[in-house]
Length: 325
Image 1 (cartoon, rainbow, N blue to C red):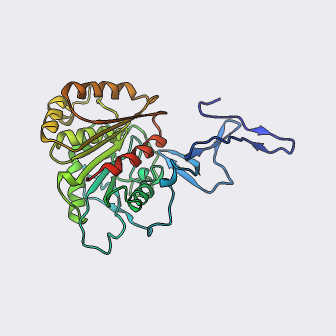
Image 2: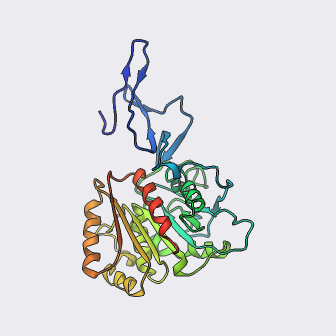
Image 3: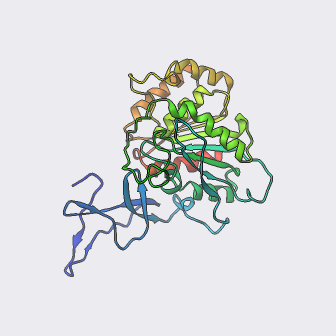
């Protein structure tokens, strides 16, 4: 039996079932395995894609998951997919969330740049991450300041999610050539320039945040270290820390001195979250030891579980209320 799988039980009428009454409130994905073939639930029309896997989805109601739902508090549609200016001869797409009232005001807003993980794309935080629901609810509850959230495609060798670019419905590859190339970190200023030229933003460090999960946490670490006066708020969710030894991009070199400069330039929040069974736990522990020796201040959250969307949704829910204070 595969890890995380359970056996269905067949009753006298030939109905297969599984019962469990202690699911924690959260968003769950699942599939059936029938004679070794994975299949989605034909009685559940709600499905979601995670990298190359499409799964059935169910949300268990409760306190932990209340911000993952669409509440009857705000008007819908405040996000759009836009084409960004060229980088590396591609035109990456960006999902942009704007807060309630944006269309009818002249107000300027702070910006959170929110980055996905390896194999993901600009749709990941909006679907599995429930980013728009979390932002809508936190803002309505008065727990978070209204903000713009920019979610770009972080794979510079893919311009967009499958079917959303001239590349067509391509087969998704977790390890694209751009990973650890330094391209995302090098060209990230283009995303910022596009956002600040086309949206009403407060364009200074105290009104900019950057955060990401896994590979996106890796990008957030190095983008903020290389642009040390750009972001007052940094969030690393289950982040990768060091590139492979053979990757020699300048953006990865002299990290200690860049962190020292970032420290000297001051910032308001450096936030790290990791699950106790995450395969990157040791890497994050080693990184924290480095920060501790430098007296580099950070906020640390250690949760149950591993490298999962359940944790990343929780981290976003905890990180966002601390921004732009």
